[in-house]
Image 1 (cartoon, helix red, strand yellow):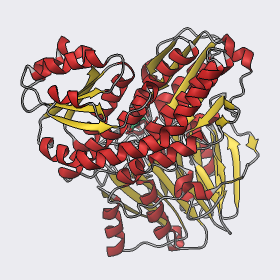
Image 2: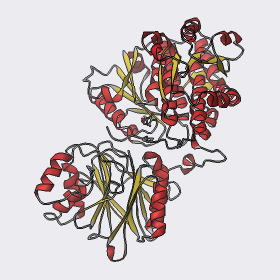
Image 3: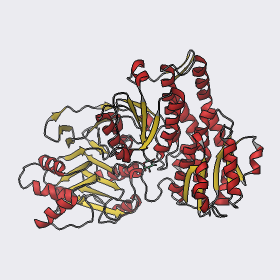
Length: 615
Ligand code: G6P
């Protein structure tokens, strides 16, 4: 969580740091700060609670200047998002400044030790121990590099840090340990940029090196020297990045979230490209390194993720089990990593993470790999941390997603898992040639179906949203492949409207949640035409009988749904296997329109961040 940005070169660092932080704001936006080495190399620090605009105002009132600096946008873990708790944190003498992602798990012990040797703490953060430790190590070691190395080696947990000192003015030292966010180092002409991710470097450079876990880099304006945390030199590999794929702008849309919802038909086309062939019909996943024999030998699959990615995984696991007959389950990555599961080389573990940085998911995947399982990462971010752990990566190709609430990455992760399940079914001979053909045909219709679903939603969602926006809570129900979409609908609504919502199997509602049903608790029932439709109708009538308002998501032309629903959001008729993908559109748009009606900050909802790089 949190974003780190740094600059070292010949230009004034401050505007570059501030605009870099604005691009990283989706990673955390409760406070921000910069430290810039000015004339005489003295460090000047500006910090402000709240959004980055507050930091911009502070700098406008009393600008700071210098050719070297570091900055940070925070998502609070230890201590409230106040000015003092914002990063950078500085040493006792103010000559060392540090920005940090991660959690210092042994910070109480370190803090006690530092206090005993006379250090006072200004903030409530765990991070403050880092500059104080660096200062302490500098008494016994001559260089900032060594002091940072000693410090990071002493920190428990996962970390990404950047550090500057007024005593060694020509450099910035960065380090990574574990999975607490990335460090991308971008190269310009006699200038270097440091960022938590490549996307924030896009307007500045396309030449980039990535720091791996347990690595440290000493950066000067024309050089980057990387070594391991135990001091072994490592060659710096510079990648040329295709910056067009990172292009981001809101266009004419009021919010990134709305733009990203509208982009879904196009995103669906991108994810299919090169993975399905129409003549001859077949599925192709060239980035999977598994031989057919190995695919045939998998005895089980576990899908891992957090948040929206779990709900996508619940759809994906059902695809794999239904299509390729591989027993498949879904687990919360944070629980899985501590569960001591039984795995072997016939187990396939698939981790879904749009950001590729979620700490719980990365650790769970590493755990699975260490136990001998074969691993696949499904992510939207090329070269993100997860891709360096997994045996294989399947990219979502959704294009950059800036809205904190995931939309097109959810849709594209389900499509990737549809492709994976179909490819496995093809290789394991579970699909006949006709079935391959019919699935390829279904997928070819998907972008147009998504477009129709958006058109339908545009006609009805706004009025339904304004009718129910003042409700005290919502329940979302669905069955089969649509149960995860009910959960996702509740999640989307909570994230951006702050209205309490629960999603569940429609069968579950009578076992407790129905006690919540009253006239202020609408129930969204995803009741598309499929073999469980009649069961859904029964559950909906149970709600109706208790005077609950039912908003159905139903297949166009199914007018009989009106006997059991107060309002209807229509979606186009589609094959059952595509229903979860299509039904995601109205739940996304309902959440969006309710949040818009309530005047909320849709792209940066309170308390959230797009990538969570801490436990
Ligand atoms: C955070 C975000 C959620 C997201 C989850 C998993 O909690 O706020 O929107 O679903 O992380 O993110 P990932 O990048 O691993 O898919």
